[in-house]
Image (cartoon, rainbow over all chains, first blue to last red; front, side):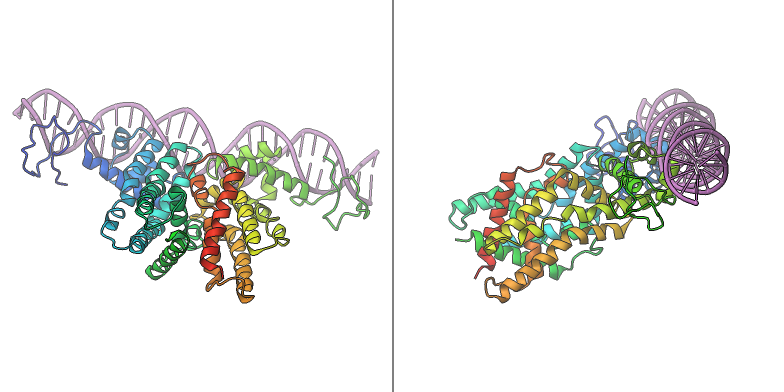
Length: 226
Length: 226
DNA sequence: ATATAGTCGAACCAATCGGTTCGATGAAGG
DNA sequence: CCTTCATCGAACCGATTGGTTCGACTATAT
């Protein structure tokens, strides 16, 4: 319950030091409360889906009154959009970074594939993906943005890597964008589709992920290696 | 509106010949009416999703009274399950057959890939997949059965083909099941995922499909060719 | 200390949903 | 011709929903 006044510039209590003092936030602007709402909403949405989730349930889960909830978000759809916007980056952060130190091209690709597959097959992300897919018809932009933040983000980054390695003569990739798409599909071959359709209800094991990733790299290098 | 009495064995009107005469069906057993309901339900579900679709809307679309609807299907979920059950086979029929006459292994794989990709990326099938995915949490078996009738059916068939070609010495595929999964992912690389997330709102062109299919075959043969 | 204002919580609202009921209708069957 | 019965259609039901309102409470800022 101890918040620091770190956001509102109109709050004169802020001392520069980290202080546990509270300060007055304008209605609907307390970032801590906002996070609290989003956190509760995440739980409810993730295990009930968009339609089945009720605003009352979200209030209860978030520990916030309904009136307050509607001060922060104007309706259910707005709340959901904000939630996806808030989480989508977090899903895929930390994977790109850890790839920088990889050694050979194979190591690089392998790390890429395993990181991607683990994340994209994890229970939470699978559920989130299902929900986004289920509302794509009603909120077309949401799905597109979610895809851009996830798959497309990886695609772009990987394509860039492939292009530079090709220019350096370490690979022979005529169409980096397309090859990146191929690689991403290979990285999750046999797992993701079955997961998203509920055919597999548990996350793939680390061994399976690395095995699939290794085969993806092998296949990729057999085709695009020099 | 002309029905033949072709199903009910209790109907003495049936003459063996095709007749346009009507006959009395026990309540909830007229196959024509059943088809009529499923057809209306299909339209409504496909462009509204499971939750947004209402039983009243389905009645109107099907041209059937609500009372009758509930004679044929005991509730919304039951209707939806029956609908998926009714359509899932139809989605993927006709693709396997047309592959039998293919010549070389490459031709065979190419036909497989293009047929699969066209079907799986078509607007109707994409929408159906989205709906199934959206209810997977509530109806786990439905998603699994749908997956089995679609992807898994292809996987099995393709794996069998790969195995026999390997035994004949035309291919070198150590793990046919897994290789089949790889091939299927490659066949839809760059299209299906974007389609399902609504990132692409139009079906891929025939040229793109064949191009992707051709690259899939090339990659596959580079890895598993003799 | 006092005024201010963000939050609470519970009641409230209109709308809609899935599902049921039942008398009217009209065609099939003997 | 008359009976039977599947269908119709419209009213009806209880439950639940997203969303609103408003007075009570309380921590903050002056």
